[in-house]
Amino acid sequence: MEELSSQYFANSAKQLVLISVFFGGVATTILGTIILHESDSKILKAMVLGLSLSAVSFMVAVIAMIKVQMILAPDSPYGDRMELLNFPRIAGGMAVILGIYSLLTVIGLTGWLKSKRIGIFTTLIAIISGILIFIIF
Image (cartoon, rainbow, N blue to C red; front, side):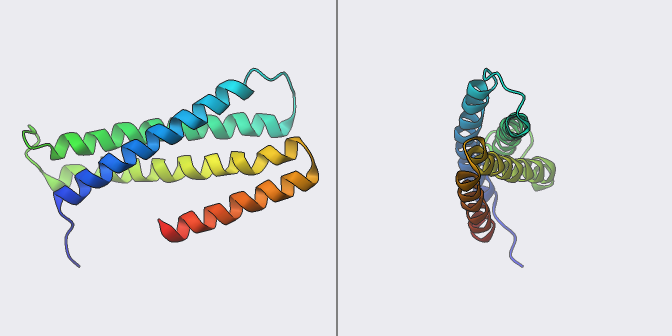
């Protein structure tokens, strides 16, 4: 198997930072909105937990991918050492995936706050999206 170049990792990290910042902002905004909602609904509590997990996962992903970029920068004191990429690359990738799937879970739960019919529909949308993301990613 061909070894991937440092340029590939740097470009991938840059894209994952952008994606993570965007989705982390979405998760945090929704979390801030629903946390003010006065309700003891189990669904709402699950949504708060899912959004918290998503927001924090995307924060971890941003920091991890910035670390990858720092290691691969042209004048890096790390000296472009590929073995230093393992932990931040794996941790960041896992954090992105966890953030995406926890955000999809929350999207699936949203409809249940209104009705069973809408809940089934939003759950199906989230499941189909999750499968497509798994196949694509």
